Length: 514
Image (tube, rainbow, N blue to C red):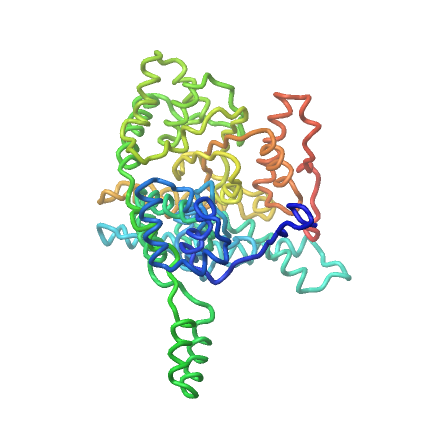
């Protein structure tokens, strides 16, 4: 069937591969400026032409959507879990990270920050080593406990049985893993996201995260790893032996180095807007909440629908303290209107010509959940990109979760001692020498400690998260949170409850069918 009558041209669809991301972006951008086909454009375009085009239209004229057309795959290995959370905190992000359910982290190693004195370094290493030893011990103990209470069915293979129970044991022992634990992740992002990601990481509070920003920028500008490079080199050598001239031609084609985005990320630098605004908002939050201790709250609170300026001001302050959104918004609402607007003004005061407003200004959603949950479970919830997430910092102020199975196995006292020891060391390291002491101390916080995050979303996303995350295959931590999200919406909007197809988390789960 033709699209322009029986004599007209036929629709043509084809995939493209083997092209540098920036050249591909240029070729796609030419659709808006040229009648040439993709194949014709690619034949004309060289790396040099692509660079000239991007320098003109991307940087000079600000056509930043062009960078959306260049997608780059990057591997980031042996970074801490703390840094990984910072890396993946992008709304336009696709990737995967090492799973604490399916992998044993006992040999992964851990990040060691630079300490101002040897005593702090020694205390840090001893504490993290202790937590790793406890993680390994709990992994084994909880596996044996689960095996004792869950007999293997005759029809189930021993390997499948062991793998299932080991995953459940890791679900429990991961609560002891510190944020210093090394992990690895892979990401596929467009160049515009990569540029903003690099700038954000370079502006971060933690030295490790800033260093990661430098490494990402370097990786995008240097020759990329080529899977077939060794085989290509061998083929070129074989051709050279038979025909030196042909071998040189083959070398130019097959051994050409590819750089992912050398032009599109070259101006990615620390963002003064973010760096200058952060301490000012922190001071605003401190001044407003200084006489109010963080209140004990439920795991999930569906926030009231505030006047828009109250929401914006409260959201701007939220990442800079450890209070609940309800506490902050209540205080903001009580302020005179000029004072509220001053807070919003602080959030925009240092905005440069090309700076987007920060995520805190993405307001107006009807459903806003203030969620307080263990860090390990948060990492799973963090993957939901269709909602706006505003994170607070890592802390031990909100105490920690204790899984029911650990209590039933009689391991709760040992578990609590380990968690308390980590909190005490975190406090000691926070008061150590050096300007980065508070940031460094966070690395010893285990994943079982609670973290507060504001999730803003529409109704469809609330239904999606509730349905997906209450499934029986999920981790018990986020299953409870997703269920409470559903319950909160059902209480406020009873007529809408029937549209949720959730799994009742109160029903018992067969561990061997997860």
